[in-house]
Length: 290
Length: 260
Image (cartoon, rainbow over all chains, first blue to last red; front, side, top):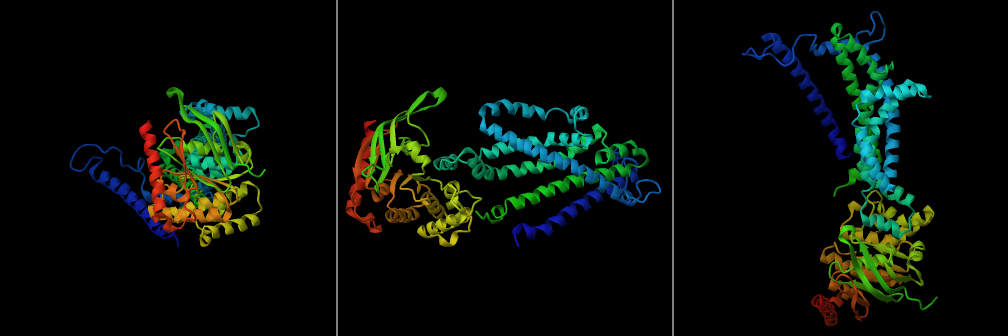
């Protein structure tokens, strides 16, 4: 078994311990506020966050609401509903990730090929990420409606908009990473540009690409949720968050449950990229004993 | 054409354009012939352009003026025809490829079948005495072993000319001497012509038929020293003739610096 394999149970234990500690802190803070009437013990300074059940619902209430039916008298529990919504959002995010990654890699190759485009495009790529997604999303959806794009596809496009950036930037750095001697070696074989790209530059770029993919995967979920919220697409976590936020006063624990579902979805896609990395770099990372 | 020189360099100059700094002459009026089967070393102070000269022969860079022929054809054509193999100071092995796959890289680019590639890489691994490491990754091998793989890769398609840029520069003294003997025996077995850049006087004296001493930038040929020490064996390093040659090279290098 590998080093990583041996460490896995320990890691799971550590993650669970942090979760338990967080829940304990949460409940402890609540209990302290209830006991003192909302101030720091022994003072009359107010606590930064109120401890009533509307602001901070109990952990057991948040967990409990997961098994409650979504609609009064309905069969479907909130947990099942959230999983279905997360799956809907996951599909949008996955398309966004795929489109953004392909586009980002394409940009990296174009910029590698032409130093003119490298210099010309890079500032625009940077500026692209300073535009607030909230402003951009409705524009993309509106444009989509005038063409062949459905709203769901428009949401994927919004996710792709966040995804392409780290892939393009890290991808370019990775494609440029081989040392001169390796490039000269390929030249000495009179290797065409494409052969150097596939046999040298791409493999050398993998250690640069995977951190970008990890970032891009979580960003694609953020992009999909924000895209859903600003376009009003139904079926995903974005819409659920919007609905539950609107009805916060009658069921705050439901919004917390939706937030947890979003976080778990982010964790899930992150995990997928970690697995993909293990597969793509197998043999190398594990056997690199120096 | 028989009787052709393996490498023929005629009135070659190379100036680099460094933008704001202006132009820097790296190589000036170099004429050099290397006979087939000969082992020629290029030695000189740092920055004398010995690596530049090697890269010109390899057609990795183009001369500003003059001509270079390899086996009677222009250097550019020789590169396209894969007439030479090349090895660098850093082994430059691709760490995502197993050892056998590294050796097969040039064969892959030439479109050899998988079966032929396997056969040849096995043969080359026997030649450099690394048979049992075919399925290892480069980072699992020592520096000396990696350099042997790089030599096997350079020779995998059996080129008649081997161009080497300080291939043993990063190795410790013991490994280095061992590698020198290995290279000589491989060269003898395959009857390869070698042009070898080094900054080690002992290495140049031990390995070469001729040592080309270059002057500092812009590099010109200061002196060509013939070395005839017969068949090289490890004891050659203790032969008084060897010391005499090393001294001759050292003094030539000193007079180059003094003339500056």
